[in-house]
Image (cartoon, rainbow over all chains, first blue to last red; front, top):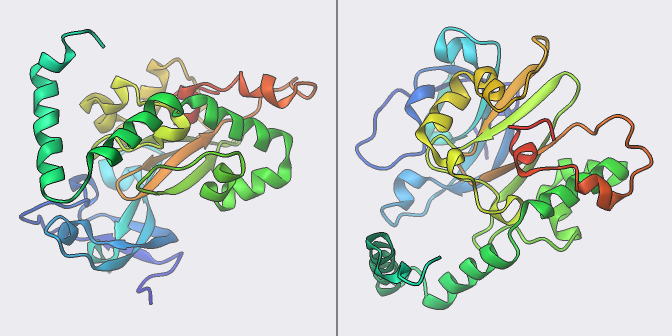
Length: 88
Length: 194
């Protein structure tokens, strides 16, 4: 069961975890749009500690203007479900 | 690789790391050797170029390639890595140019693109590709019209990307092999037109 679907507006979480993560700093707190549900993969933040818990992963498009304050391009990056919350 | 390679500090460090992985039961020498052999004997941008050329010639293959990259690679006999990943092919059009990067490390479909170039792993490329791709592309000699939309794909998860470049005009008569010879590694990354 996936929490988000293509077209959903989402926000990348702002938390800075203590250990390993694949949530890059440059998208934290920013709003994007889910373009596709990619697959289900173990959350790296836990897998690195030997805990393998599958989670849905979403391809999320972030407009450059939102990430950097300028630019007309977009960046698409995969987000594990734990990295996302509903956009306000 | 020179004769003294095994004496280099980096080689010793790599070997110590391998020994730790093997001791922890996370890998075996045979697995590591298989991966290296695959990289050195079969990983090549010629593979990705053949997939692109086939897609240019055969619209049904193009559709399959865009829908399921792994299956389309397998059709031509290409595996997609011992560990497996989701291969996503992104198609350039007259209006959209795609660029791939891994901002966290240097992920990339090695089997289809060959060993990654050193600039692909550089901090400069990894940080600038997502921030100012048009400037980065200009440095690679790729000048796109302002109206072309740029999409940058960050390979931060288990998805690996391959760019399908735009087919050159006036190539209708070319066969698949000749078409494949027009496609470069940088074209498959998006830092060249093809």
